[in-house]
Image (cartoon, rainbow, N blue to C red; front, side, top):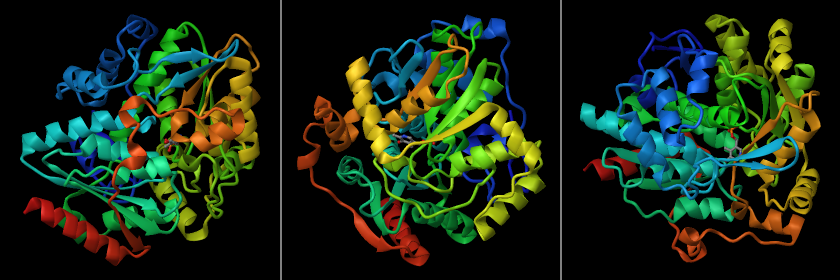
Length: 465
Ligand SMILES: *Cc1c(COP(=O)(O)O)cnc(C)c1O
């Protein structure tokens, strides 16, 4: 299995190289040269596998088969707080919450990053190399990346977060990790500014090489690959490949829903993909009216979705444009220059035949959390609630088709919103109960590339010494 860039200006690469590189040198994102796919009989044969075994099996189809996947997957999910790894909880006659938040940081990013940290370790050790991981987070990616990389000998990690725009739990989960290879920077700016700084560091070729920069945010292909197995697990549990299912995903960077799309591309009968947004609704506007235009990011109760540029959308665009890299490159360049993405009508129509968009404001989110608690006795975090509301609004007409909602965060990560909506304050699990007493460590820097690069260099040099 080889990987190509959505912008078509780098040679095809293997899995390890894509894992370590993150973003392609031409600014594009890596995608498989051809999508693997399983027959109905092959999907049926995967039913009932323990989750780590299923993940190992599916990752093997993406060119990672030379890694000890069974061991890596078993170790990655061993510390999860539920024996099913990704339990499926029924909320009404047809809506199911796929709980992806039983990992060390209580959010779905652990699903991929616990695997990625171990894959990096393995590949780097074999090559005798070190890397510096830089990432931008609007909340959960950062803590999940830090948990995945902390104390690993061959990795330094620097995570940028928008100052004052993450929840206190999210910030503390990052800034209380005292491992010497971990650095946190609060940037005076919003999440998109942090993400732009990370992209700018990658586009600074000398710096990129000097630091051996690598990424674990959702532009890294291996993260998408690692998110496919849980959609397969849920679909198989609900009767696929012999029964159609739909999927609803509270969406930010479009990585999680793209993984569901990939599961469909691999042969699972997923007949609809529902994209949930908060008031930052660029994707909803795109799906409703082919209006992919940037607006200012506004804070909401679901901060991991406070995004106006969904980076992983580029992978879908590439597919919708018939894998035309030149057209993808041009569309992305115009998006950046003009703030509006020109998507040809045919490509937009293809997207809307499968995807539906739904946006919910904070008031609606609180009402949905309250309703889930009243009607199903279920405590949902604000992101998950956007997903369940989207599922109810846009479920396929056929009531026999179940809807799998990606439950992306534990309610205890967003206790204020849950308490406002239900009167109940969900407690942190015992292993995190002293989070508010732990000491924090982080720097604060302006939204300025030179200042950020200097801080990254200082951190990496100290640890390499
Ligand atoms: C990251 C995140 C999302 C958005 O996922 P994307 O892959 O960026 O679309 C949704 N909910 C939570 C809790 C998250 O941490």
